[in-house]
Image (cartoon, rainbow, N blue to C red; front, side):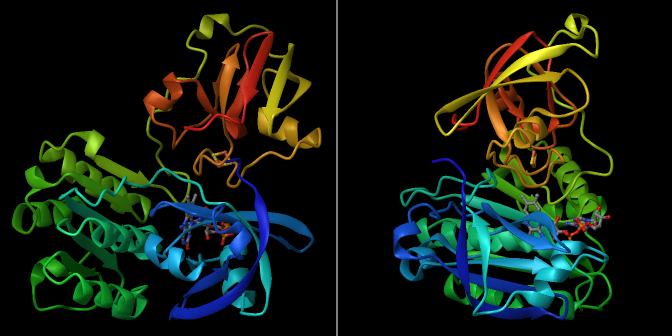
Length: 368
Ligand SMILES: Cc1cc2nc3c(=O)[nH]c(=O)nc-3n(C[C@H](O)[C@H](O)[C@H](O)COP(=O)(O)OP(=O)(O)OC[C@H]3O[C@@H](n4cnc5c(N)ncnc54)[C@H](O)[C@@H]3O)c2cc1C
Ligand code: FES
């Protein structure tokens, strides 16, 4: 189903910490199917601040089964220092109001199956707990013999988001969920639980409390240094990268190597000012544009031509703007989200891509 915005009423607001809230949207019955999500996915919120349209993505913290019962979809929003949207949302979003919410998207998920018995591991930091909360609840609720170990880093006890919800989960799935809080500022009795989730700390957890060779899937979400540290410590244990899932909330400071673009041969890059014909297919309709092979992205050119196209971050992180190249060649400036096999299938981030052949046909209607 194509991604689309709908205006949803806000029915819940909880103060999670001094600098974060969770917001619940009530999805009307006729839209319930459109907002059906897989645990770990996110929604994109859209509003106008100082007369400018702003979009930001927020992971869903509700469990799949709770949404099916109540039709309420919740997100957790933590203030970012100097951040425009997160502070506006914390200050303004309240029950009785409504906001534009895009239908769910994202691939930080797992296919839970009632018959599976698996061992999951999560490394979370700060607001990175949001998708993890949904994953833990959904996975342990569906797979009745699976286990989840969560290692969650925060500055101090007061800054732990969803503290109560996590304790409830631990009690509900007694013996199947293990939860370790790692605090940088508060002192805890066990030394392992003090300090930052750097590579040495992650390695110590893997050595002392987790048996990495028995783990089926790992989820990592949090600040960039923590995610890099956890990934490196896991790889050091010999864990295959295919078992490790990472959700980025922003552009990495030091990027992973940019994955190969859909056009593999840089020798074919011709004059930078050449105009190319680009056909954009969206919602079953085709529009032809002409755009240069450097400068404006395919997404921005499409939006400027008045085509309603999905996007959120415009930074190569969220993957909302993806499309598939059906004909011709393009190149991407950045890619922090598409996997090599997705790129091999012709998927591109249109906020980052430019035409490289005289004719390109891209479709937003193809799903990953
Ligand atoms: C797939 C996805 C899921 C996300 N889920 C969540 C979520 O569940 N909860 C949540 O609180 N946020 C989440 N985010 C981040 C969120 O979309 C915004 O980026 C964040 O709220 C900051 O927006 P802002 O407008 O306040 O900051 P901006 O005004 O856009 O940025 C201000 C400054 O903050 C820096 N910055 C931006 N984002 C972050 C960040 N996440 N951490 C640290 N510094 C940052 C920028 O580099 C800039 O310097 C998610 C992002 C993505 C892509
Ligand atoms: S809009 Fe987020 S990756 Fe393109």
